Image (tube, rainbow, N blue to C red):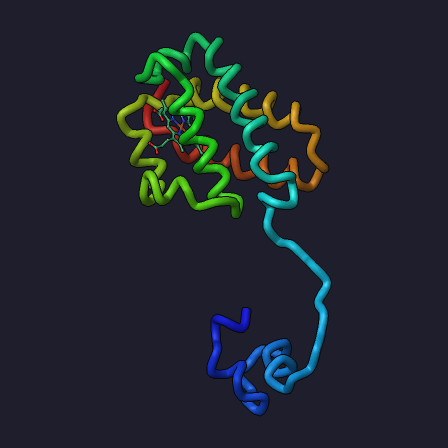
Length: 159
Ligand code: HEM
């Protein structure tokens, strides 16, 4: 926090400093409860996202509509890209961006015919994968809401 505005934090009289920074600048000790608004951490971090994409790709591997769309023989690299993207999106490591740059997901899907049928298959496997996680209802609803909207926005061709 204080690193965002170091000059304000150094001056206890500076009204633009955050309350916490003004206390620190005045030499006061304080503790703060550890809240987290980081979804990635709140749901269990890397292990949970690995389980999600593993279960999802188990479904894709068996799917007669989706499987032929994936250019590579081996689904592992595609699985890894989805894992890294979702981890970054939800507040985890930013490895996706380091390796792939800006997501531009709609653009990256343009080489593939994402039809309403393909979207529904995608969502069906993702739904099963989310269900298998056994998340807290609010987390599950938050994740699902995003995935559903993202899948609808990815459609770029008619059935
Ligand atoms: C709606 C149905 C969808 C279909 C049929 C579909 C299909 C595909 C295919 C065929 C690829 C190329 C595989 C590869 O990476 O080599 C791909 C890549 C990818 N998809 Fe999807 N996708 C869908 C929706 C989504 C959604 C909703 C998300 C995100 C929430 C997503 C995230 C990604 C990511 C991150 C990549 C890799 C992009 C890259 O860095 O190159 N996809 N998808």
